Length: 158
View 1 (tube, one colour):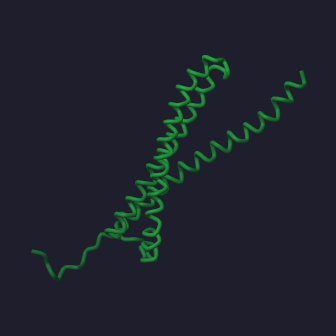
View 2 (cartoon, one colour; view 1 turned 90 degrees about the vertical axis):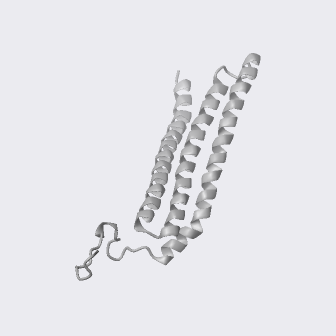
View 3 (cartoon, rainbow, N blue to C red; view 1 turned 60 degrees about the vertical axis):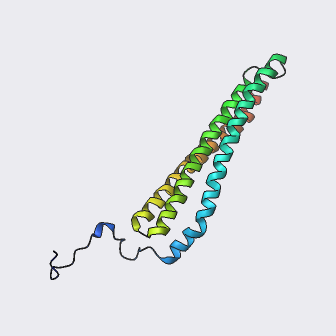
């Protein structure tokens, strides 16, 4: 039996800080974006499957084309490996978006700050991975342009 005259107890660890409560506008925005997030996550998985199929086709085409000496040996295998890297990237990005969409569903069901934190953590992981991938591709792009400019210059200087 509890003492009805005791001071009320509150678990303040789970309470949002002052002025940062979950509002209905926040929930509505997340509700409206949840389906789109899931759609893009699924499309990324579909893209990963097509990339794997493309890698397999490159592997088999490399064997057939390699016999005719029309393409340098290993080129098709290298392209297939690139397709597999793209499949992994698409799969990882899709994984985080699907987890984010599911976390939004939990948030809409219970409206707790713990569910909001979970959703935001999944979103943060997606954007961190997307940012790292964008930076890697940017560096590769700059190196590719530099190689396209400087390698012919070095070759002509001989």
